[in-house]
Every structure is written in C-alpha cells, then in structure tokens.
Length: 294
Length: 313
Image 1 (tube, rainbow over the protein chains, first blue to last red):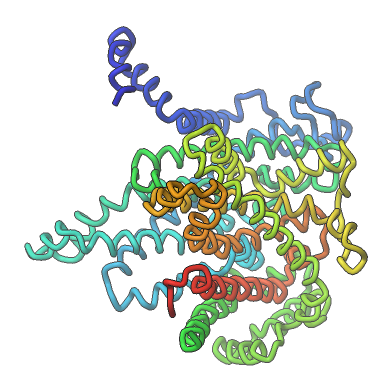
Image 2 (tube, rainbow over the protein chains, first blue to last red):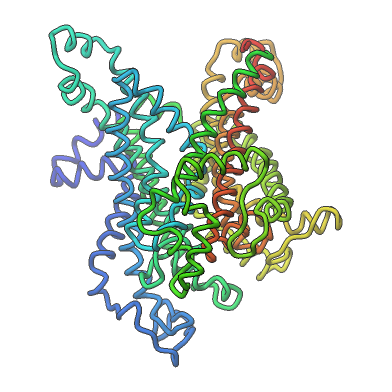
C-alpha cells in the first residue's frame, strides 16, 4: 500500500499510462522485462523480411563459415547461408510452435478436464489414460510420434501438444473438483441450472486465470522441446530455419565455430527466459495464494 | 504395509498398460503408411514389405497387439529394423553409461539443490534468496544443450580442465570416469536442480513458520540443528516427491546430453534410431524409460513412511 501512496503525487505530473507502467515496473520488474523482451522477439519475427535479412536458405559456398561481426553480423554457416537471417526467421518457428502448442493443449486439456471433473464415470477412465500418458517423458513421447510421421512444422506442433495435454487435464480436473463443491455452484444446481450451463457460466470463468499461467509455462517448455527435437533430428524439417536446426547443423563444427551454436542458443534462452518471467509475474498477479508458496 | 505394496504394484499395471497400448497404437493412428515413412524416400517395394512384416502391420491390430504383449512379457522387445539385432541386446549394451550419467546427475543435483533451497528459505527475502530464485528461473530457461555447450567451451576448450566429450567406464578407474561425468551431469542437472531448489525452499518456508521451530530456537538449539533436524526433516516429503517426478526431466534430457557429449548410452541409441527411423528401438526405449519412471515414483511413495512416521499404509 505504501508503494501505491507514493506513486500518487507523481502520477499527477505524467500521463496516467506511463505512471501505471512505472508502478507495474516497480512491483514486477522481472515480469515487465519478460513482456518487453517477448514483444521485441515477436516484432523481430514478424518484421524479419525488413530487418536487413536475405533469403535464409540462400547458399553461397564461396562464403562458407565467415566469422561474425564482419560483412555478416552473425557470420555464415557451412553452406554459406547468412546466420543473421536464419536466426531472425528462426524466431518465427519457435514462437509459432510455442504459441500454437500453448493454445491447442490448453483448449483440448480444458475440454477434457471439464468433462472428467463433472462426469463421474468418465473420470476414472480418462484419468487412468492421462496417468499412463504422463508417465511417458514428454520428449520421448514427442520423439515416438515424430518417428512415425513426416517431418513438418504441423507434426512438431501436434507431437508436443499431445505430450502437454495430460498436465492441463490434471490441472483443470483438480480445479473443477474444488469448484464444484463451492456454494455458488451448489446454488446454481439447486436453482435448476443444467450441467452444460453450470460448466460454461460458473466453472469455466474460474479456470481462466490458472490456465493462463499454465499456458505461459507450456509456451516456454514447447519452445525448448521444439529445439531439442530439431537438435536431435526429430523435429522441424531442415528446409525451415529453426533455432534448433541451426544448432543441429553446427554440432560437428562446435569446437571451430562455437558462435554457430551460441548465437541461436542465446536467442532461444532469452525468449524462454522472457516467457518464464512473464509466467511468474502472471502467477503472482492472478494467484496470490500460489505465489506465497513458491 | 505389504498389502499396500501389493496394491500399489497392481495399480501400476493399468498405467503401464496404457503406456504400452499407446506406444503400440502409434503405428496405427499416425497419418500415412508408417512402413513407407520408416523405409524412407529411396526404399523399394520389397523394403517396405519387409518393414511392414517386421512391424507386424500385415496382421490385424488385436492379433498383433496380443503377440507383441506376449513377447514383451517374455522380455522380447522386438528386432531392430536397421541392424536386425534384438532390441533388448542393443539396450543391454548401452545401458551402463545412461545409468551412470543419471545417477551422477541425481547425486550432484540433490547435493547442490537441497542445501541451496534450505539456505534460500532460511534467508527468505534477502539478496541470497533472490539470487537463488533468480538462478532457478535461469535454470528453467536455459536449454540443456545450450548450457552443455557453454560448459564445454569454458571448461574444456578455454581452461582445458575437463575432456570435451566421451565416456570412460568406472571399471577403468574412478577419476577418469568422474572427469568425463562432471560436465554432462552439471548440464543435465540444471533444470532438475532449479526444480528441487524451488520446492525445497517452498516446503521449508512452510515448516519454518511452525510453532515448534520457534520452540526449538527458543530452547537455544544451534541454527543448523534447527534447520536440519527440525525443519528439513519435516519438509522432506514434498522434496522427495519432486525428486521422483523430476526424473522425467532427467530422462528427457539424457537423450540430448548424450548427443552433445558423445556418450554411447541409450539416449545416443535413440537418436541414431530416429535418424534411421528404427521404430522398434524407439518403442522399446519409450517403454523402458516410462517403466523406470513409474517404478521410481512408486519407490518414492513408499519412502514416505520412512520419512514421516505419521504416514502409515
């Protein structure tokens, strides 16, 4: 409260938006840092064609393995492709995979979780299946799926989504089990509200905040899983420049040209860090009970 | 206790059944012809037919699943498409480095993360706490292989203290073995350490707020005695739980770590199998690791009685 009181006088002199931003920055500096870095990375991904890049797939064998900071900002790889362009376009792949997996796994997990939390006979069956799926380490599950499908961005998203769904189902189910014992849900049932309507009007809105937090963490872990899959050759096809692919191709050259791995690695780590910090900030803001525990 | 053990062991059967059914059914539910995908672009019709027969795709689903389960129950994990050797034999050849790496990582992670988490909780709110929690977020965000390459660059290439890659069996001497294990264990253990440190801190914070801690301090017991004997002992259940659950992270990380450090273990076997689309190997490894994960967590559940006498089964 003291912080709010202090912020008030200065708020009068500057614009309210700026004052609110400064207040948020003081209270959650790391979350704001995460948001800013993530927005910057999204901007880079969208604007990649206009940021002085060339075709990320264009090879020029004469200019192989140039060092960075010369004519090529991040140097060139073993096929003479411009690493700067590849890394910038790579941001598109990582962010797309992260966002798509976060959205799909949350939606599917929410649907399954809502039903299992409310329909008793479905609960036992679905939860046994989810227990089974959860005992397969997620990277292995994704590897097994990728080994049987053609390498494509869609299949990478699909494989990682399948691996993430059980955790969302678990979360939603536990939320529903708590919520349905709440007086307002009992009141709704007593007033003759049907199951479907109770789920949509009373249960669903209360799952949004925790799911938003969980979705952010899935975003971060999906980006890492994509990079791992690409790095070991079970991920994004080689004609798409993803950060994992750039690193995978540089594996054998690491001792000679470490920057070929370290530059995309730094971009990946920074983006994942930004999303994780944003997630921690959201968790603190939306779920104070959990924030105190962690 | 014995009745509980039997009950829990029986309860793992449906879980493993789902795992087996899922891993097996992937062959049938994946889009396209798996035999053709496994065979690759330059395969002939005979190649595809051979792979189809090897995977049993020419037989009805249920018949095939029955045969496969029966074989599995007898320790037959199938035959590698690429080398034509039994998968169980291939895994047996590669299991030692993987077990060694996982155990080393486990030991390193627990030795580092638990004390760090205890100190962070003890000094909650101070800069020590903030540094530890900051490092934990960093640990969550740094992908295993990126950190692994950073470690190699610093300790192997710049300082030349440790070998860049490779594996030496413990039978060839303890020090050579450890020298090759240090970097992979630290790299693989980072996420795991971050996780354990966070939970240790959270669990300790809860216990440190209890009245008996204040009593212990009022009695004039030394700080370390209060922290370890009174607090950590009571905070142990969540910590041990997360050590068990976190094994999944280690298993996922093993595949990548063995690739970076050229360790000839099961992870490396898996990566080679991916490149050759040798599905029987991937299938077997997935099953094996999942079984290990389930059994370890069963052991963790059972250890609760040792850690907390109030818990009785």
